Length: 165
Image 1 (cartoon, rainbow, N blue to C red):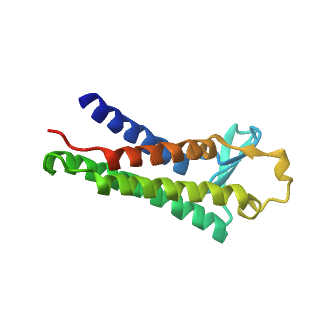
Image 2 (cartoon, one colour; image 1 turned 60 degrees about the vertical axis):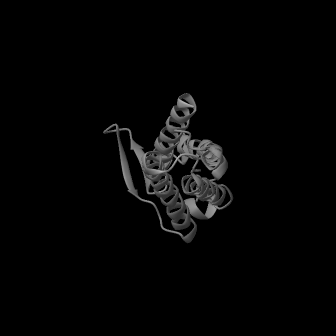
């Protein structure tokens, strides 16, 4: 039981860290090593100064919905972890972690909706005159996709987890 509890806790913390990185880091769409776009900024690499020059991403309703859903996912997952810790010490023996599991499941659904919107509406979100075929999805986008099943699995595990001691 202690191993299962520790494994779920580590899974939750790892997923929360990956979700936070996917939300805040700058690589949802990439045009090679010279330009990256994320949920917040569009960055271009300046060869003369060898630094990244970033400007705010152009606002669109689709981008704002992706931003809101990713933030909602991080917040729900954080709340889920804090509630889990509280329930761990205050819940009576035999209780189930329903609220924790539901928060985690909703965090997974929010992240899933965000990456789906970015996938299908990237042309409107990026608003770039260049061909999208020249670019590719960045590592933060892939990280967000990896978080979706991890959030859903951990949410399902929390719903079925029963406090023994």
